[in-house]
Each structure stands twice: as C-alpha cells, then as structure tokens.
Image 1 (cartoon, one colour):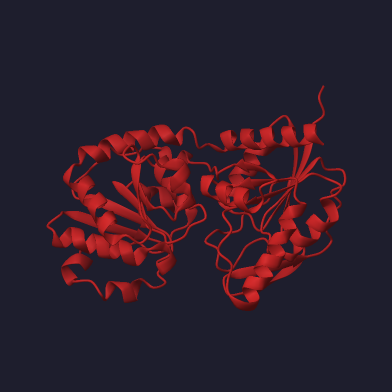
Image 2: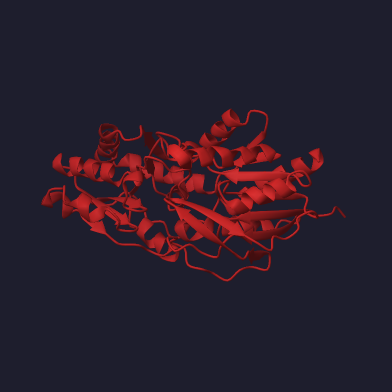
Length: 364
C-alpha cells in the first residue's frame, strides 16, 4: 500500500472557503493533512469562530496591524521535518518568513496566494518588497487564479507556478434556485460598502438605469461602511429602489442570492472574490470589473455574465441595460452559471492540490 503524502498547511485564520478545501483534502486517501492557523479569528472578519477539526490547530501568537496589513508572530512552531510538503500563505507574516527560512531547505515549500498588490510607497513599500523576496525560497507557488499566475510567473520566472483558484461548498447556494428573471429584475451586490469594492460605481450605474426608465431593484448586502454618504448623492426616486439588508452571516447569504436575478461585483481590486463563486453557485449571471481575479477564471463573457473595464461607468451601465431590456439573456446566463457551478466543488479543488503534491514529491 502506498504511503500517504504528509502535508502541512499554514494559514492565517479559518476562513470558510479554506475550511471547505481542507475538509475535502482530509477525505483524500492520498493525503495525511495537518493545518495550523496563525489566529482563530479577526475582529474585522465576517466569519464567526467554529469548532476545529482534528487536523486543525491554532498557533499561539499575536499580530500587529499597519493600515490594512497584519503582521503575525507565532511561537511553539511545530517541527515539519517529517512532512513531505509544506504550504504557506501570507508572505508579509513574520511567522511565514521564519518558517520558510527554517524549512525550505529541508522540505518542499509551496506559497499559496492571490495576486500580489502593488507595493505601497515609502517605508511600507520597502518592507513589502523585502518580505516578498522570501518567495525565492519556495519550491513552487500556487497562484489563486489566472491573473495571479501571470503575476507570479513574471516576478519568479524560474519557479513552478500552478493555478489553483478558491473552491468552496456551494450546496446551500445551489439548492432551490428560483427561475429567472423576475419582475422587477433584482441586482445584487454583496460585500463591504467601500470604494475599493466599487460600490460608488454600481450606485451611479443603477441611478442611470432608473433615470433611463428601466424597472429594477438593487439589493445591497454587507457592512455599511461608506454607504450612507454614497446614498446622499442619489435622487430620492433611485433610493426608493434600493434595499440595504445589512451584514449577514455566511449561513444567511443564500436566501439573498436567491432573491436576485443579476450579481454585480465592480471592485477596483479584488485578488479573487469568493462571492463570484457563490453567485455562480446560486445560478446568477455575474457582471464584474476586470479588477476582480475570479472573473478571469469563472466568467465567460456573453455566456454566464460579463466583464467590464475597471472603473468604466458607461460600460457597466450599458451591460446592465442590455440585460434588463433583453431579459432572455438573464435566463440563458443563469443556466450557464448553474452548469459552471458543477466545476467549483471543494473535491475538484482538492484533486488539483493532490496533483501538485504528487508532482513535488516525485521531484523531491
């Protein structure tokens, strides 16, 4: 009988999409899995703490925040010399830096990450560039999506680069998907109401729809953040067509996706955007900017949605008007998303990881 591949993951915290993947990996007969998290939860995280599985552990430690960046430092780090492969994410974490320097020469190490954000200016930018150099110690990089893969290939041309998008359990989103479209057509956005997510662009585009005579409704789900200020700029007629449902726990999200006929994610930047997976799982046509990593992997323009140039209000408005005035496109795109969702299960993602592990252990 072939020995199992001993795999150790180090991750920042137990996010739902990673939990789903780890659960699928734990069921793979080829893998002996152990997962360590740098912290149990984050104060700004939308995910509640859940009981850990037998293969999951929280490392003691703390973090320091600098703007949107979080630097973790953990101790009592377990020995991974008996592992066959080690996977880490968060290159700006001090724990990741230490682990790679200690383990990369002993065990094949894989960095797992989204596209690297553009370096900040000044001291923070200098620190980012310095810390990114640690990835030269890795045996391979698992990029989250095509855009990330292209980015890492350019930065590290001599490394093995794999494309492994996020995979999450879409069962609750796929259950009892309603027939679409309905009247009035409902457009859904799910995320923080902030400029990086492009909510301002969506609100302007929606206002254009209403002013042009389209009958539509906009449903907003997520943290309020900058929303009150943004709504003040809109006419009362438009505001009457907007419903803000507030922040919702992950368990409650499917019911809001089922209320919608179109999903829009106009982010100025999103390394991936798991809500795109969820929207596809719920059978929604997805419209997103080309700044959303998931769009390049999961959306076929003209089939299950559309992609518009980042920040281009006119193009987003035109796409929305086209769907609203030709509602048969919504029905066809919805069916395409339902079909696409069958390719996004955690079991499929786990198989991709197993292929990577087998390749690296053969090389080793």
